[in-house]
Image 1 (cartoon, rainbow, N blue to C red):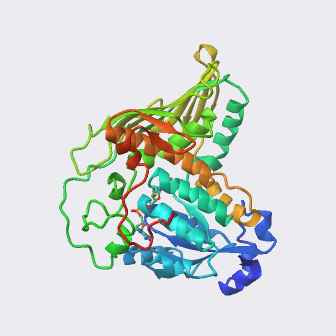
Image 2: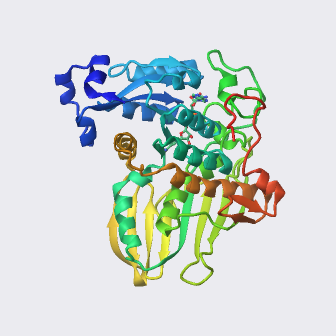
Image 3: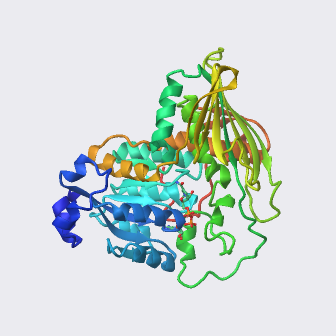
Length: 434
Ligand SMILES: NC(=O)c1ccc[n+]([C@@H]2O[C@H](COP(=O)([O-])OP(=O)(O)OC[C@H]3O[C@@H](n4cnc5c(N)ncnc54)[C@H](O)[C@@H]3O)[C@@H](O)[C@H]2O)c1
């Protein structure tokens, strides 16, 4: 970190002008004279949105924009040229080599989240990593351990955690407004696109395919993987359970009030909506069992439903959660607010609301200054991402799983346990070191 004056001088922003640029949520710590030098790693749709937010913060200097797609890196740098003048490059190692960089934003495909975060933490950087924080359960655990070792801030991109109306209603929920919450249901119901059936082809000029593949098993370029559609391929994505689903799974787990992992998972799913190259289910029903000490009053259940070929808004929300308490029910939409029902299904409270991505991003910078735990710290992100990974594994092997929450191992199922980790490209520099 550098002082605010050094940063402003470096970036050529006049001090007088800068004082009028203060963002309403800029914290006291920044005003006291600090700034953060940041690099964006991965600047597709989400990385560009993050870049814009951070570039607009008067106490953040964007030093690098990094992407193996030359055109995307150039376009992203161009988009912030009025405020910042970052260097563009393709290889994230060059970013991590620079001691001036305090923090990185990892908005790559999922298969890079763990490896890039682990390398960044080893280089002493704070990390904002997009959700799901990991490609698989084992990498999530490595990330938790690495963050503890490095004592750096790791914020995961599940922005509901910084959203005022959700925090407020959960304070009431956990205060017992509808009694003990026994079951939570999360759903992800929306219409995605068919990705067709394609064959490998030549990678476009200016796109470094080798860097994009990174530590995943090498395979030829195929146009229905890059960009975005990698979500639906086992080696790179986590399906829609790990895409939009993980937001709802995280909120459902939070509202249900369970900190740890479930010990049983049942899932049934497959491809009912798309006849294309997607490998993950487009339709999925999962239930997670949290037995507590086995007695009534301790046991909880989380249910997840996913249909990604359906335009239907369930209970008025395409993505949402329901919390079933002994005295009522809470319906909560990702981008719709909530409805709280008491006994006799009586509507007792209603509010509209929108997820607050800006607050979540600001929380990352604030925590770098204060050393506080961010709203979606890596352990929180790992426990929630584990739900999407377990759902995918159970659907893939086609049977229920027993999970050991302490060891993070699937018990008595060698084939499923293999999917707790993944296969890497042999000898690649970004393969996580145990
Ligand atoms: N928090 C949210 O609400 C939210 C919303 C959308 C996406 N996301 C997440 O953001 C991430 C990116 O999603 P997207 O839609 O922008 O995908 P995308 O495919 O459009 O963009 C990913 C970018 O990362 C780049 N990349 C790949 N390997 C890289 C490497 N080694 N170094 C640097 N860059 C690399 C790609 O070239 C691409 O430009 C995903 O994990 C996704 O789940 C989060």
